[in-house]
Image (cartoon, rainbow, N blue to C red; front, side, top):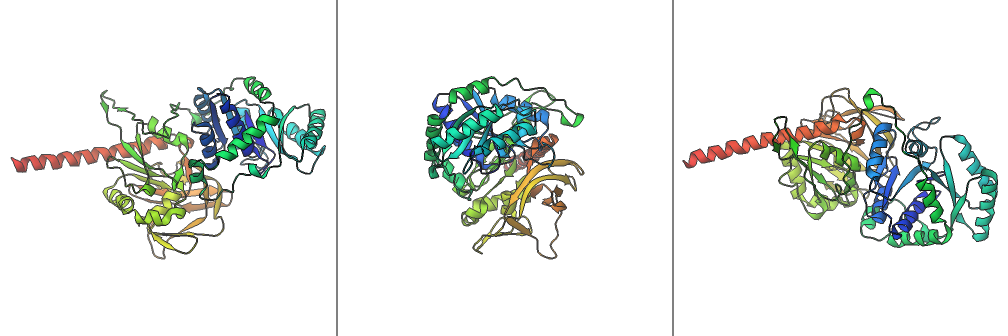
Length: 495
């Protein structure tokens, strides 16, 4: 079932988390999904269900890929709960469904639970629901849940109005309750989720929904959903099934690459930075790398760890390095390891927060300057206001780790920092980045190093994952050749 809202702030996240918790209490295996590129809500889902939540994005990936991935990721679940993004019909385009919750509901053939904030309204709530039902006939709004009711009497009033005018059942309600307010998305939020500090909020939402919502009716509506329809593929939308591995984000499950000659060889190792400072990764990006034969090994710069010695490549995702800049700057094992890896030609891919750490310094919001890796000849400076937000289509300006010149990837950009290159500094941009504001050059490439602000989705151009893994494999082979040569030389000297 898709949990959609009439707009941002309608309460769909609270309802989603409460329902996940309530159904999990009943012993159901709940699989969470999030429409769009958001990283925060999936972290909530994972905390509540115990299973890694997945992103479904109908603009960054093809429709055929999205459907296949949804089917695989939900195969072992009793119930799939898909949280929408913004309002039901809000997406990439002003007059079409592209990238919207509505499009994903259609692609997955999922019934929609529409969450409506009914503060200070009565029968007008029916007009809102009626408009949402009539705008797109392909979207099946199966039920309504009204949020922020002033009382049970208020709930009964809007329920009667909606059901009479729209013929859609109102299956439950939530009262106005400050205990249900999800904290603002401040930068320390994910560590709070991991520490379990939001568990009382999840339980409170579940308690209230169990009291005021017909959960059995909701399960019946979800169970009545038809099979996911087949999607016609264009030649550039070929789907390569991704082996769904629910534990991949938790462990470094080894995967073996077989050469054309037949014998198995050790998988190239990609070291992935993951902790409170670096945690923005699409689950299927990691799965696609594993599918191409990589073994993922996770490490925590905040815990004082350096680059794992077995690494053949490094992937540093986004997150909140500015909140932990002093800790990162003090970890010379990590920063020095990055410099050593870069000098040795090890493939190094970084996006957003990772991009910031590769710079010479990071100036936080207090004006404090922290030394970073110094691999990129630039300085990161935090700003008071958001600098960038939105989808991006990036085109490679040169051959690089992920792309050949002219090839494209799709992704999303969200940051409060700017990358300042000193006057006279020489560098090569990675991409031409296209967004609502037009085109501009972005990122940095040099040799085996590639970094940019955009959080790219590897499924938007499937060869990209293979290229990164191939680069790591080639580095491993060169490293082994050098090690073998050094060993042979040492043996000869001893003889």
